[in-house]
Amino acid sequence: MRSESRYYQGKFYPKNPQKYKGDVKGIVYRSGWELKFMKWCDLNEMTLEWSSEEFVIPYYYPLDGRMHRYFPDFWVKQKCNDGTIKEYLIEIKPQSEIAEPKKQARVTPAYIKRVNTFVKNTAKWKAAEMFCEQKRKQGSTIEFIKLNEHDLHIS
Image (cartoon, rainbow, N blue to C red; front, top):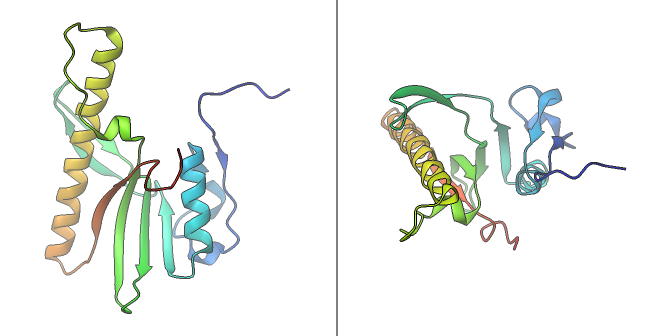
């Protein structure tokens, strides 16, 4: 009997390994949402190349005052309908972690955890935006995008 896990995790084996840029034998998904996106990247004919957690962006976490390492969920090189090529850094999170937590009258441990998660995510995303901005100054078309369950059509 399979043990219950809060997260749907496993290894992904692409049908089009030539599109994957990185260690094709080490592709790991950490949620069903990531698995769905991996399948889309692998099978979508407009996706030219993609990778998952294959590079690092340093970021400053203000709650501990230290530098940390952020591995964006995905990098995708996509052919657009107009024939142009665009690159995307993509982070997949539930909408509850993308939106700032609403202030509560009572500060509970769960609320503190939500706030800390939001602060950490915001610090990572700021670093990703800065990374993309630097790359665009060098001629890249890269953009940072956050996707949630609604974007992936999962509820």
